[in-house]
Image (cartoon, rainbow, N blue to C red; front, side, top):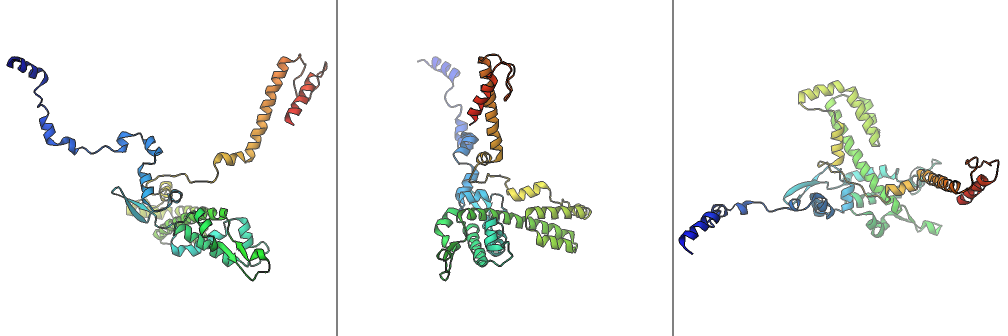
Length: 347
C-alpha cells in the first residue's frame, strides 16, 4: 500500500488516536458504579425485597412482623445501613412503663377476662387478679423489651402466664392458663395503642407547658385520659380555648405552636412517612364474607337466578296472562307450575 493510499484511509477513518485524551483523563473510572435502581424497575426491586426499607429491616435485630407493626413509633436509637444512619425504636415500651401498661392492658383484653380476673359483675374481688396482671406484665416484657413473638411466647414461655395452685380442691384449678393465644395477640395490639397514647399525651403536655396556665380542669382530664379519643378532645379544647395565646406565642417564636393533622400523622407514621400494612389473621374479604352483608348477597343471587330461570321458562312455554309469582292465570296452571318449580329450586 502506497503512502498516498494510507493517507487517504487516515483522512476518512482517522489514525486511531482521536480519543486518547479521554482515556488518559480517567473519566470512565470516575463514574459511579450502576446501582440496582439504574438497572431494574422499582416494582421488580420491591418484589425481590431489595429496597432500602428491606435493607433496614434485615439490619435491625427485631422480627420483621414487629418492625412493620410499630413502623410509626418515634425513633429513639439509630442503626447504620450501607453508610446511612437510620433511626429505630429501642423499646416499644420502656421497662418503667410496663407496670402501668399491664394495668391498662388487663382491662381491655376481652370481656371474659375482665369479668373473671379484673372486675366481676357482682362487684366482688377476683381471687386471681394479681396473678392475671402479673402474667400480662411478663408478656408485655417479652413483647416490648425482649422482642419475642407471640408464637415463641406461647410455646416456650407459657409457664409465665399459667397459674399453679397445688392446694386447690378441684384438680382443674391447680394449673390454669390465665391467657390464651388470642389474648397474646390482643396484648401486643394493645401495647402499640398504649405507646401511641403515651406519645400523644407527651405532645399535649408540651403544648400545655407553652400555655402557662394553671387550670385544674385540664389537669383532671389529662390524668383521666385513657384513650386516643379523649386526648384528641382535650387537645382540641386547649387549641380552641387558648387559640389567641398560642397564635401570639407562635408569632414571637416564628413558628406555629398548634399541632396540625400533618404533624400528628408524622408522629404516628414515623419520620420517613412510610406506612406499612399491619399483618392480620384474616383478610377484609373473609371478614365481609362472614358478615350480614354476605347474606344479602346470597339472597340477591337467588333472586337474580330465579328471574333468569323464569324468563327462560316463559320464553319456551305457552303464553300466559301473568308472570308474577304466586298468581294463577285464568286459562291454565302454567304460572302456578312455575311457582312450584321455583319453590322446589329454593329448597
